Length: 170
Image: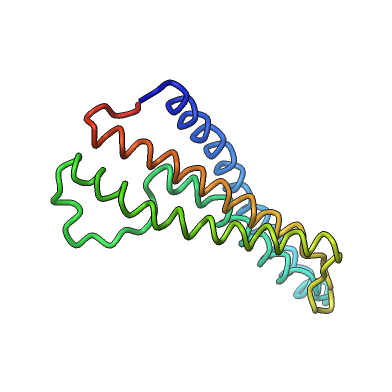
């Protein structure tokens, strides 16, 4: 593969490794919020109205920002009817073909996410709840997560093409 493509693949892997490990830490923040909610309600008798929504927002950021990392480590669920029986080159060809559909889907999803994030920023969109938080942070995390997943899929496509040609990218 040409050097710019190899550098692109390695750069995307590096960024997604960093973002994925950051996303792992979100789990602990989420656990702390739920622990505080439980302590506040049971010990102090003062329930907090923001804990459930905050946990939902953190969970959304967790899986959206961690998606590219799990793709990078081949941790996504795969329906394996005959895939494991294929040789490495056959898997790369099949992955290279099917990944084009996922890339198309993510481009459409990214287009909608950008539009939704712009709307949330422009109109200071808030959730309809007692807490009424602004929605742009979670929508921005959604947009970034989809973009990183798209980049990782493109990098994976290049890897599959290189593997199918018999010259894998390390």
